[in-house]
Image (cartoon, rainbow, N blue to C red; front, top):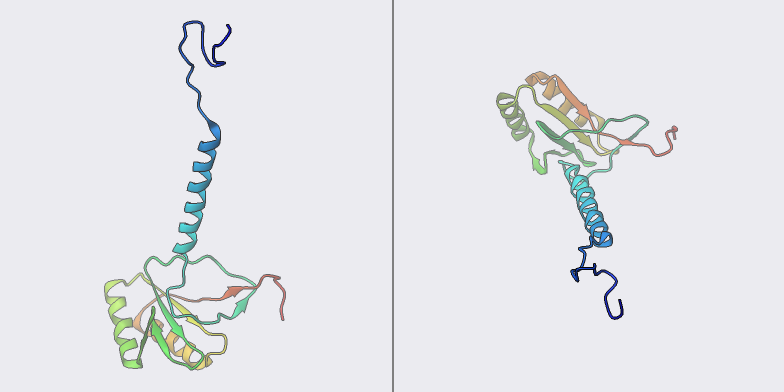
Amino acid sequence: MAGSSGGATSGGKKKARIEIIPLIDVIFFLLATFVLFTLSLNTPQGVSVVLPQADSGEPRDVQGTATISVTEAGTLAWDREFVALDEFLKRLQSFYASNPEGRILINGDENAPFNQAIYAFDQARIVGFKKVYIETQVRSTGRHQ
């Protein structure tokens, strides 16, 4: 037929076409959004410290977890808020009262005084927590320095 479009049928109606390229763009956008959102869920709950390195490690789940940070200067922080020792003990007891199956994550700077990290660990065990973890950063090469 002269002058007819390539998509026309013998009845003169055009066939519907599904364009795949825009759908692929939408799928890539959704995938990128999902990846960025997932990465943002795994942000540290404590103050910013340089974590010590280890050859092993496990992904952490922040649900039901309180993070105790020990800075290089030896100060303690509960989640993202710096606290004095008496306030630290009050929050530890309060968290245990509301969540006895909760977990404590000690997030200590690699240059923090060792005795402060042991103090935090010991106090969490004294209060009654059975799940007390120390957060580390997994070495990329897997060999000792």
